[in-house]
Image (cartoon, rainbow over the protein chains, first blue to last red):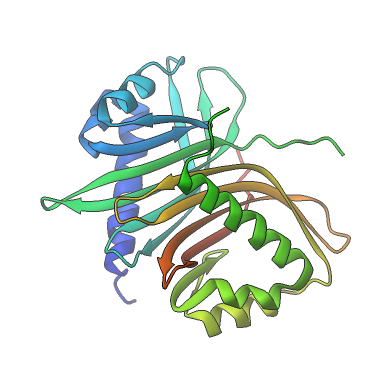
Length: 128
Length: 128
């Protein structure tokens, strides 16, 4: 079987690392962001590593577990990698919820960092 | 109230136009892609405007309706706009289904085109 394209290796490697880190010790996610990174978390924007880490560290759960349903990865025209993730998560004893997340990854000084991150819980308007 | 940032205007304008066109006459979506565009549709990849339009035109429904639950837009380091959409859709008389989609938009000759597009229905592994 042919080897996965490089962008898939980079994207899937990042995704695996990100959620593993998030679920065990999310303080260490700081390595993945820079001062130029942007996060939109449930519609709220955070600019730069410090603001992003303050938000992620302050999320109000003791335990969290992500389960990835699907992921897609693309190379972008400007040599970045864009990754879309669909999954489910369980925080503490709450019910399982669907989520979606998108990462834009850029190679900075030989390291793949996340310049753009968007996260949303899958909550729809079920009215009519 | 302050005006929306430029990238939000570009992203939300694109999103509105895309789904309106998709739901009424999706053949016209070809204007939004170039020969360098990539689409991943439910995990299957399509490269370039022709392949993308062949896929979109051949989708097996008579009528389709998208409803946007949420959308987020970011400027990227390389002056692109990244847009993440969460919504629901109804094809023909099928049941309503959730979906997620991501677009990467680039300004080419003064026109915003979609260089990267990823679409997935929100279907999770409900086992255990």
